[in-house]
Amino acid sequence: MAIPASRTRMVLSSCYRSSYLEKMLSSSAARGFSSNAVPAQLERVGFIGLGNMGFHMANNLIKAGYKLTVNDIDQAAMKKFSDCGISTVETPFKVAESSDVIITMLPSSSHVLAVYTGQNGLLHGGSQVRPWLFIDSSTIDPHTSRKLSMNIFQCLLKEKKGNADSPFMLDAPVSGGVPGAAAATLTFMVGGIEDAYLAAKPLFLAMGKNTVYCGGPGNGAAAKICNNLAMAVSMLGVSEALALGQGLGISANTLTNIFNSSSARCWSSDSYNPVPGVMEGVPSSRSYDGGFSSKLMAKDLMLAKASAEEIQQKCPLASEALNIYMEMCSKGFESKDFSCVFKHYYSGSHNL
Image 1 (cartoon, helix red, strand yellow):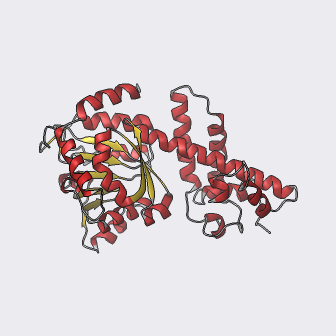
Image 2 (cartoon, one colour):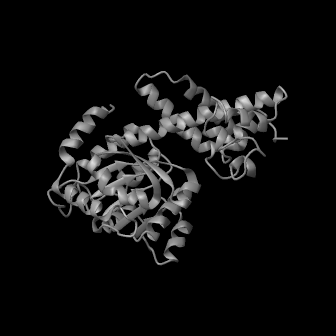
Image 3 (tube, helix red, strand yellow):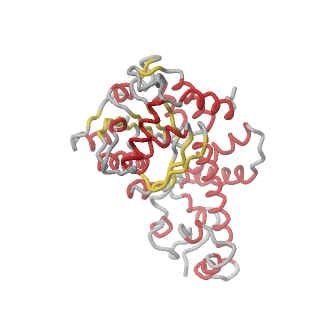
């Protein structure tokens, strides 16, 4: 049974506030959230998930002065850090044992649950944990995120922090992709207790440029899937219109100029154009390699569709977009950037 978001927010809000958080907030405020001054309560960070995104996020934390302990199922990924003198351990539980804060960046809800509640997971020690803050930056469904927040709230801290007996959790998925992760320009969409969000803000600003507080537990996850639904529908609309224009004899460059100076202007047209030859530095200019894969877009659309069904919300565009991206994946384009629909679904051509 789903946990109502309003009830979760009410329970957690009433229980999470403490003088410890207030003390951390004043400490962070005094430092102005400077990446050059690491607050003591955030200094020891455990980072789990060193894939395309997590590798850069963890690296930026190290550059900002945080002391990291990392874990990943890929030994080669961990070796990149151990070769540089960064602590690596074999299980999430061991990460938790040496960390004040945990950050996870994982592919799916099932991976997140395994890392948190599975054998040798972060909560393997039972009802007592050492980290006072858990941050999940994975893109997962809001229900799983809220359930996990409740599970963490029911734990006790091994070492009491001020008047706080229980740890905090924030769901903090990101936008910006691998380039944003590498350049530390990510946008974090954060759900959870606002005081915990403010206390953790120096961490977010070491990995990104923007943070948006979205409300209670699970709201960051909800914001992310809504954002990616809009992004998918926008890309499909722009690709469809540009391919139609080509078929009617209008060059993609001409039509793009019209879009970008009229009511059709949007990110998919002016910043991430899907037509090869129109824009430099985007996936369409390099055979749709890099960027945000069609497989990941299909996953996020599945999350949006499932969430809509759970609350009986009509989302016909989400369903149609999902069908298109599932077709892209079945045809072998799962690793190509999601803008490849222009060429491989709509049969659009290179800008001439």
